Image (cartoon, rainbow, N blue to C red; front, side):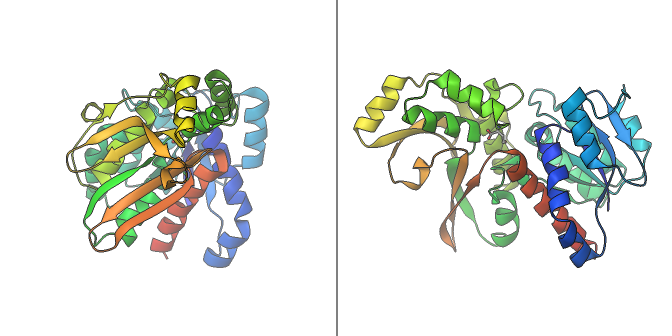
Amino acid sequence: MRIFLSGFGTVGQGFAEVIKRRRDFFEDKYGEQPVVVGVIDSKTFAVDQKGLDLDRLVARKQEKKGVSDETYSDALAVMDSVKYDLLIEVSPTDVETGGTGLKTIRHALECGKDVITVNKGPLALHFHDLIALAKKNGCKFRFEGSVGGAMPIINLCHENLKGEKISSIRGIFNGTCNYILSKMDNGQPFEQALKEAQQLGYAETDPTNDVEGYDAATKVVILANSVFHRDVSFKDVKITGITGITPDAIAQAKSHNMVIRLVGEITETRLEVAPRLIPIGHPLSISGTLNIAQIDADLAGPITITGRGAGKIETASAILSDLIAIMSMRL
Ligand code: HSE
C-alpha cells in the first residue's frame, strides 16, 4: 500500500505516529507496512518511491516548518511524480472553496486512486460529485474522521446500520467548543480556554470556524448528505455559535443544574447548530473534547455513541480504521 499524504500538520503527523505504533499489526495481518511515498504541506514536499522516513519528516517539520527545502507550485504535479495507491488528504479545511483538498481528492479519484480524508471542506461542498467520481473510477472513498474525530459515526451508519431508516441524529460535533464550554463551567474565561484548545491542536486553523458554529455545521451537512442521502449545503443549516455565551449565562444554567452545550441536529425538517441548555447528567452534558451522537434508527431504536472529537492521535485513529478497511478489501 503506497500512500501519498497531503497535509502534514497536527493530523498528518498524528497519522505518521499511528502507523509507526501499529507496525506489528500491519506485519502480522498483511505481511507488509503501508509506505508513504509522498508528502506535501502547504508549501514544501518530499517524495521517495521507496518510502519516506516519517520520523525524520516530523522532526524536520517541527524544527524548520517545512518537510524539506523543496517548495512546489503545483500539488498535482508532485502527486504525479510518484506511484501511489491511496491519497490521505488531511490539509486544512477550507469551507469556502474546498482548497487544496478538493483539488488533490479530485485528481486522485480521476487517476483511479483510493482516497481517505478528514478534510471537511470538499465533503461539505461537493459530497455527491466526489462520491460519483469515486464510483465512476472504481475507487474507495472513506472519510470517517471528518465527523466526530475518533467517534466512529460515519462507518457505523454506513456499515452496521445500513439496513436501518435513520430519522434523526442529535449531538455534539465540535470538540473545541465543548472544551471551551466545559472549561467555562469551571470558571475559566472564554479566551483562555480557546487558547488552550488551539495549543492542544483541537481548533481549526482559523478558530472562528469552531466558535461560530461553522465547523459543527459542516459536520451536520456531511451527515445529512452521507447518512440521510440528502442534497444540502452549508446555507441550509441554521447556525448559532458560542461567542455570545457569557460567564453569567453559564452561572445561570448551573444554578438550574444545567450546562450549555453546542448541539447539532439533523431531522427530516431541521438542520441546526445552536447552544442548548442540557440538564447535568444528560448524555449531552459531556465535557472536554468529547463528541456525542444520538441516532434514532427505526429497527434498532436509539443508539448513542461518544468519543474524542478532536486531537492528533484520536483523529489519526479514524484514518487508521479507514486504511485497515481499504487494505482488508484488497486482500
Ligand atoms: N476543530 C475541530 C473540533 C476538529 O474542534 O472538533 C475536528 O473536526
